[in-house]
Image (cartoon, rainbow, N blue to C red):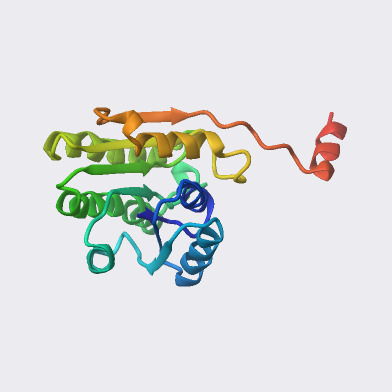
Length: 223
């Protein structure tokens, strides 16, 4: 199950599981995006099921897991991609945006872990993709810290055969080609290569993608 699968890291991770032959459940608040990525995964030769679901809404979360149980009877693992973004300066942050960040990243991670505890009791993994490291505004750091705390706390109460870990990209998603280190790290934490690794929050340094030629020329002309 890959949440936030409609774009960015979620989409790239869904593709990677498809290339590995996994059955992928693509979850996104936008059903058209979820369906589009599921079609892309199936074009890679794997099975994919799209589900519309907003992981910050508890009813959506419960319904999503229930649908997966009805379709497959089991779930091997979850990749939850936090999706909230904030480029607002700390001193300009409004209450509404702060609550949006909490809902999209912290509350969604809480709900996914709660349901994961129920549906992965037989073994498996939860890997959370946290907000990028380059965003060092205090409110974004606070969100990242809260999600890290959930990972650490869940590790203490989850069965030992369920691995809960996180990855922190160094920047926003760019392209599938230049984001492979993040994808490989996430897939690795969900594989048996990482058996016994729990409570890890791993930073992933991603290469900067090349600038478009026109932007490069503009920057070169600057004093």
